[in-house]
Length: 87
Image 1 (cartoon, rainbow, N blue to C red):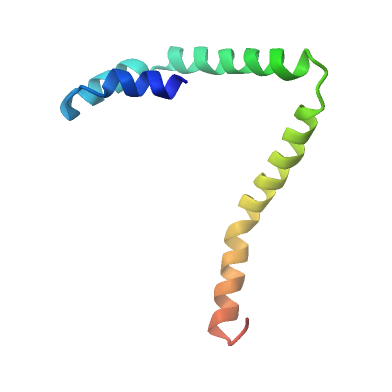
Image 2 (image 1 turned 90 degrees about the horizontal axis):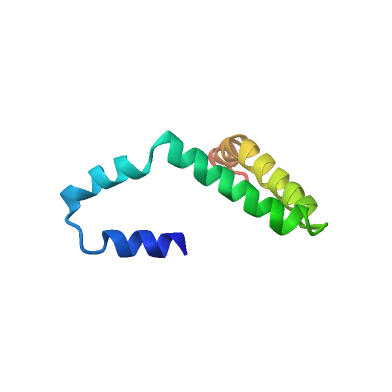
C-alpha cells in the first residue's frame, strides 16, 4: 500500500526531480519512524494475539540467514568440483 502511494507521487515527475524527493524522504528520522511503526504493527498483529507466527518467523529467518552465510563457501565448492570433473 505504501509503495502504491509512493508510485502515485512520482508517476508524473521528471527523472531529474526524483533525487531531491528521495533525499527528502530518506532521512534518518523518517527511517526511524518507519521502523518503529513497523515494529509496533508487528507487535500488535502477532505478539498481542499470542500467535505462534513469531516462532516460525525466527525459525525460517534463521534458516535463510544460515543459508546466506554458507552460500559463498558452497559456491566455491561447486566451482572446484566443476573444475575437477565432479558433479
